[in-house]
Amino acid sequence: MAVQFGSPKIVKELSFKKEAKDKLINGIDKLAEAVASTLGASGRTVVLEDDFGNPHVTKDGVTVANYINLEDPVENLGVTMLKQASRNTASKAGDGTTTSTVLAQSIIKNYFKLDGEKYSFRDIKNGMDKFVKLAVKNLNKKALPVDDKRLNQVSVISCNNDTELGNFIAEAFRSAGDNGVVTMETSPTNETYIETVDGTHIKSVSKSIHFYTNKEKEVSELEKPLVFLCASEISNIRRIQTILEFAIKSNRSLLLIAPCDQQIVSALAMNHVKGNIKCNVIDPPSFGLKRKDILDDIALLTGATVIDENLGDSLDNITPEALGSASKAIIDTDGTTLAIDEVPEAVAERVAYLQEQLDNEDHIVMRPHLENRLALLNGGVSIVYVGGDTEVEVSEKKDRVDDAIHAVRAAKKEGILPGGGAALCYIASLSKLTGANEGEDVGIRIIRNALHSPFVRILKNAGLVPSEYEVEGWGYGVDVIDGKVKDMRRAGIIDPLLVTKSALLNASSVATTILSTDCVISNVRDYESDR
Image 1 (cartoon, rainbow, N blue to C red):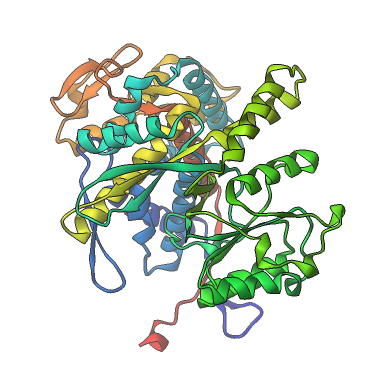
Image 2: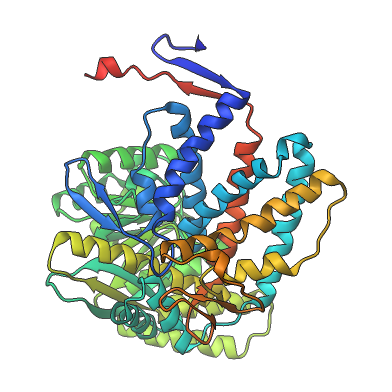
């Protein structure tokens, strides 16, 4: 049924009830089958064709998902919704997108398998939410902190059991130090190696997605950027025209760390997209006096001058001398990393001063602030340069390195669990939770059954038969390399807690949204006009 809304150029197609839901689920099944084939140590690679007909070989679930667009508009909406769940998992934990996809598909399948439509959806959702909440609580309790040995194990597993590459990444994290960050670049040679430089990490992200230089990975990279620091609100782009013109004339990229009006952000993003200037805008971290302290620390590292109109500075009178610089800036969903060629001697003096302040400070607010400032000034940046003999090899390897960097980061943040789907299987069998009514009981069973799906898919991808394995006890699972039941932690098969629980939470969220859908309104495609 086609209905015209608003502009006569945009005609909408309405799909209702079973037709709408079936098409959404068809789209999800198509995406899930492609993505799920990559799961686990024996997961398969997928060959993708880019817009120019070039092959891209990958085992990265989110990369596979991003390539999929279906002709049917309603099916494609199902694909888009599942992509969003994957992106949310990647944004939160950096990995686990394939697990999230497999769980979401299984939740939907179990809903129909258990005749979920016979019950109140509100009751079913309540039951699902209760079990997810309990599962996350139990996972949090079971997680172990990551030590030096486990750092290597997490990295190797995320690199698809490539020991050499996994050890490279673990070493990169050790070289960067506790306060450092790890990034990735294409190697200028066919060799893979690590380089550690001075630098820092700021918890501020891009003000616009249009600044991304890699939209697939949601990353913006600036080579040898000029750095502009401002504590005052910038409401008119003319006030920073001098530094914009200087950056363009100098053929340098520009990173603005300043509170900017949205119109300025939009104008800069438009010019960035058009290629007039390569730039990015991020907010200064923190607020009030804490913001001033952090801006002063960034200024010390980069050689910039902080512009603050509250202290008598004027944006109208700024000159290029106020600009600092970095050897590289990488802005992603986790924050902004600045690599610094040479750290000024004054940084060591400030670190000593802040350490003395911290030693004598017992205020509950000031201690974390001083610790954050020390971390900012003490950090290192390890760059993993990924090499290979062909572009296809380098591209595939970079996908694995990217997964491993995020997995190690997640493991350091919240700890680790037994891998291979074992943790979710155990949690599914652990609880005897019951609902307030039949509908809630069905919701609980839906999630409980779905928790086995990553384990089952990992075994199937390895050519093993899941029904032939009976795994009991916390930490035990199947090593698909030799097909034996093992203590996964002792075998070094582990997953980050943050990845596992983020995958479950996002899968449950997107599945309940799709299952509660009764109507889909999509754009009518006029394919004839494109020919």
